[in-house]
Structures are given as structure tokens and as C-alpha cells.
Length: 460
Ligand SMILES: NC(=O)c1ccc[n+]([C@@H]2O[C@H](COP(=O)([O-])OP(=O)(O)OC[C@H]3O[C@@H](n4cnc5c(N)ncnc54)[C@H](O)[C@@H]3O)[C@@H](O)[C@H]2O)c1
Image (cartoon, rainbow, N blue to C red; front, side, top):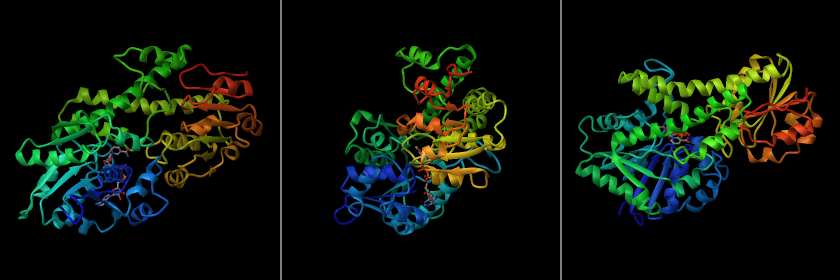
């Protein structure tokens, strides 16, 4: 028994989009464990301890409230919590490096290394240290070297347990995961640590979904999973360009192709491209890994996934420009949605950022609307002039020359588009970057409609 009524004490370092929700679910499902999430950001921890959580995720608030103060705690006292922990999850951010060797590709591991050093300094008893962050292959080796450096007699056992949840569906992804992956060393202490982690997940995850592998396979599988998902999106988006050139319909093509059970129907929705904090970063990380091992053909293959993603936004802007008489100067464009996907307020690497920047270069005026991401949008676009941030989509579209739909929020389907059309400049254009709306209905109202990968519906 770790302390009083609890079997073990879990500490998670990093209270972000992954640390917060994953540990909340562990606390919900394992009342016999004390779970504490720590972070160096006091505003973040204060928000987790308040009614206004720092991230928007459907179903999260109820689950936090269920366990907070009982076996779920949020704290900035990183050192004390590390000292008392039996099991430590590392869930800090691992962005793409922006400087020095590997800039623009390799993962920036400074936060992970600082965390490892802090764990080492504050540990007086043996601990299991779990990589929850997405890390390059063989990171566990580096972590171990740091943790076991000097003359510390404490034993650290490193596990890899990458997170596969997707923002927007994080809660159901964690409560009903497709699989949980645990990588460990094939040693006696490695197997004991692995079994401790299996014991936690076994509270709610069926045994057949708990996959155990060696450390390197686990680290690599996370990068490969994201690379495959992103590659599906770039594959269908590349075909959307062919559809626009040939008058084939991407919806019909995707349906026909997806019916092949070897291919499957999921992740075949064409759109403006992927975003979020992970896909681009993890592919770049994979590319860097390939180049490091001089697997240049493999690196080039995966680079192309990102090239197509960037191309998709560039194409979209060119299409807008061409449709709107080759000039956007002074025209008002209403951007519907800024989050990288619906049901999240996260705007990291959202295609809307690239679109907005390009439209500003064309000297357009922008009004951006989003139900949950406006605060993040303001930070992302800080310094750009001519942008209004408006919560109400009707006001955002008033006097606009066109609407560019960037995020497939459900509520955008049920807006009164007749009212919106009536308030806009004419001819009114709608560019649907997610093929999310009823295009025929919009056309009948009077809009010139530009879907992705389908012929436009034009009044002239
Ligand atoms: N966001 C996702 O959908 C997702 C999904 C799967 C995996 N991942 C991976 O999980 C990791 C975390 O991602 P995230 O989206 O939660 O990031 P995030 O930026 O939302 O959260 C990271 C948190 O770590 C904190 N932190 C950084 N250094 C610290 C330190 N030394 N001590 C204490 N706290 C520290 C930051 O203040 C921040 O609150 C990344 O490696 C990411 O690739 C993310």
C-alpha cells in the first residue's frame, strides 16, 4: 500500500490535452489509486481545479468532477509529488524542433529531458517511469541514461505507453480503446513493471486489447499509427484534386473505394487537410528517423504526405481567388470554424491558420467564428491585421463576400443559410473545406458553392 487507503500513487507530469483526460479516466476507473497531475504552468493547474477546465472535450468535465478531490488531484508541487510517486507518467509536450540540428523535423526533447532530471533529483524510492508523450524511437534509452546517472541507488524502470486518443472523442477513445500498447524491456524488472501497468488498465480494458511489446516497437508504433492515418487523408485529398480536374465526384469515389473491405470506409473523407498537434510533428519525426538511418527513399515517401497536406490548403486559396474574379483585396471573408476538427478548441497546426495567413496576404478582411476556439485563434494570429473574431456566425457572415468553412462543427449544418445569404454581398460564394453542408440547398438559396473534389455549383 502506497499511502493510507490507496494501493499505489500515480503522478502524471504534464496537465495538457493528453495528461488531463487520460489521468481522469484512470482515476475514474481505479478508485484504489491516487492520481495526481502536476504541471509547471500555474494557470493550467488553477483551471483544472476550477469549473472552467483549460481544455474543451465532450464529457470531460463530468468525469473530472466525479473524481477530483477524492483520488484525482491537480498540483504545481512537482518535486513533492515526484518524491511520493510509485508510478510516473511523462506527458509533457514534444513539439518539432525549431532550432539547430534537425530543426523543422526532429522532436524537441528539452521538456522530456528536464522532466527526467527532475524525477532523478527528487526520487528516494524505486519508480516506474512511463513515456506517455510521443517520442522518437529509442528515447527510453536516453531517459534511462539520465535517470540512472550519478550515484543514485534508486531503480527506475522505463515503460512506453503511447496515447492513441483523438481530441474531440478523447473520452470514448479512452473508455473503449481499440488497443492499449505497453512496451517494456524483456528483463525481470521490466516484466514486473509492465504487469503493474497492465493491472491498472485491466480495471476496464478487456485483456485482448492490452498489447505488450518491446520498448522500441511501442515507440515506433505510435509514430507509424499517426503516419498511416495522415497518409489516408493525404491519399484521398490528392484524389480530390483529380476529381476537380475531371468532374468525378470525390464522395462517390471514396464510397466506391471504401467498400473494398481490404481498404475500409474510415478516414476517406476529403477536406482541406489534417491539423492538430500530432500528425505533422510525428511524420516529420519519422522522416528524421529515416534520414538518420539513411533510409532516404522511405523518408521521401512520408514527406510527400505533408506536401499534399500543404498543397490542399494552397489549392483551396487559389480556387477562392480564381472564383472571386482574381482579387480578394478589401473583400470580407467569413471563416466558419478555426479548430483543427470539431468538438475541440485546439487550434494547433489547424489548416485555418495557413488559410488565414494566405488570405491576409491577398489583403482580404476576415471575420473568424468558432464555438470554442476563438481565444486560441487570437493567439495564433496575433499581429495579423484586418481580422475580427466574432462568436455569432450570423454577424460574422454579415456583409461578407464569401464563407470559407474550415471546421465541421455540427451547428454549422443547422444555421439559417437563407438569412445568412440575404445579409451577404452578391454574388455570394461558399467554399466548403470539409464537404460538410448541403450543397444543393445552398445553391438553390443563391450561393455559388465550391465543395472539395466535386464540380462547383455556379449561377453564372
Ligand atoms: N494532443 C493529442 O491529441 C495527443 C494524442 C496522443 C499523443 N500526444 C502526445 O502527448 C504529448 C503531450 O501532448 P499534449 O497535447 O497533452 O501537450 P500539451 O502542450 O497540451 O501539454 C503538455 C503540458 O506539459 C507541461 N510541461 C512541459 N514541461 C513540463 C515540465 N518540465 N514539468 C511539468 N510540466 C511540464 C506544459 O506546461 C503543458 O501543460 C505529446 O508528446 C504529444 O505528441 C498528444
